[in-house]
Amino acid sequence: MTKAGSKGGNLRDKLDGNELDLSLSDLNEVPVKELAALPKATVLDLSCNKLTTLPSDFCGLTHLVKLDLSKNKLQQLPADFGRLVNLQHLDLLNNKLVTLPVSFAQLKNLKWLDLKDNPLDPVLAKVAGDCLDEKQCKQCANKVLQHMKAVQADQERERQRRMEVERVEAEKKREAKQRAKEAQERELRKREKAEEKERRRKEYDALKASKREQEKKPKKETNQAPKSKSGSRPRKPPPRKHTRSWAVLKLLLPLLLLCVAGGLVACRVTELQQQPLCTSVNTIYDNAVQGLRRHEIFQWVLQTDSQQ
Image 1 (cartoon, rainbow, N blue to C red):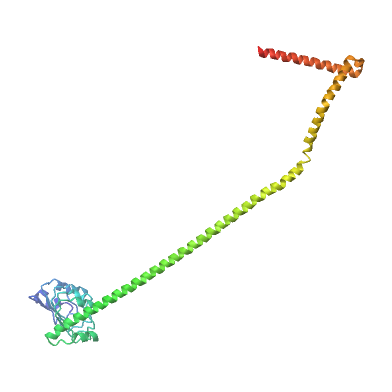
Image 2: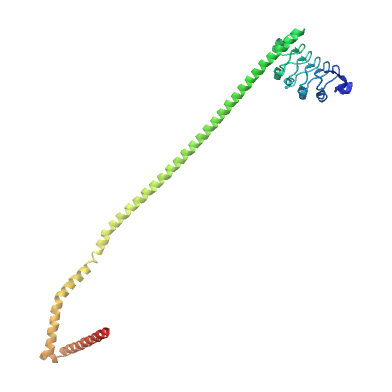
């Protein structure tokens, strides 16, 4: 049998006021859904069955005030067992429990507890003590609650410590990552700075080389200038010769004109005019005079026309 309803029929038939007795029902599974439908059943007896575990949704039966789970085969309680905040009486006699869930500390209303005949952890067993009478069971509930609160606090501190360690480790990793990033950025800036310096050095060398080339060019032109002067020195004498000739010509021209005039007079008025040379000279002279006259007449005509 796995369900109470399969042996005893409808659970409502077993409900007596606020008590529901499912003991000795050969149960190996708790009918949680059926129990949730009976919120009036605040006292539940599941003793003397074959239960090895309780489902997690069993912790939703928060209306329970008294719960008897004695003489089963429970090896552990659900992690959320502390949700049964209204529980005042809990019987866990003769199971296979070793520890209790940390949430057990949340059972603030628990006044009675029996943990006898369980293979409890030695520390928990010492805290629980015996439950041979009402007083001892109440003391067991109080001491176990205090113990579980201390365990919960220790676990909370341990959780906080782990979280702090994880936070520190994460911070260290973040800082290490940041340092690595900064080192990489510094290396990059250093490399860029070196490249910039090398570029500027090359530009400086190129500019310096260009200046040297520009300085060499005037020297070449200066060196070439005397050569051109020295090469042109043979060319300058002709103007000097021409100047000298012109000066000589200026000196000789009057004499030449005087000679020509004397020869012309001799050919015109002396007996030499019959000579062949004088004949040619006289002919040239006559033609020249006629030409000058025509030129004067032409100039006069032009001047007359322009005046008109």
